[in-house]
Image 1 (spheres, rainbow, N blue to C red):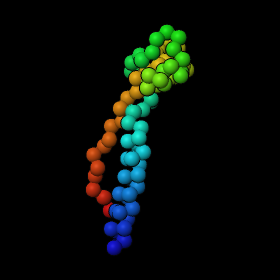
Image 2 (image 1 turned 60 degrees about the horizontal axis):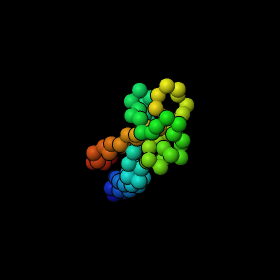
Image 3 (image 1 turned 180 degrees about the horizontal axis):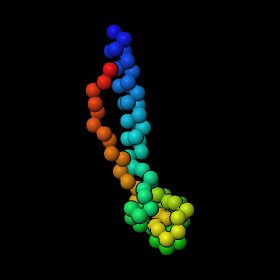
Image 4 (image 1 turned 30 degrees about the vertical axis):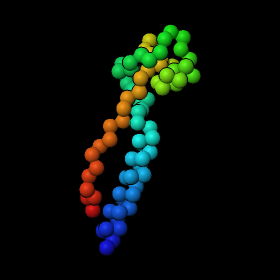
Length: 81
């Protein structure tokens, strides 16, 4: 019985975490050399976010306003317990 309870709790936790990921289907964690420009010269953070893009002006010489990457959802696996 304890095994089933552990698996059930793990599934609930996984579903909760996956629903959080579904709310944010994209991520702004993009390697600088992989950034695809989404803005224009002089774009502000606000203008960039209005375009539903990411803004990071900490690295010179690469796009500061760039398209986010989609979050890949791994296939659900059976409980290993």
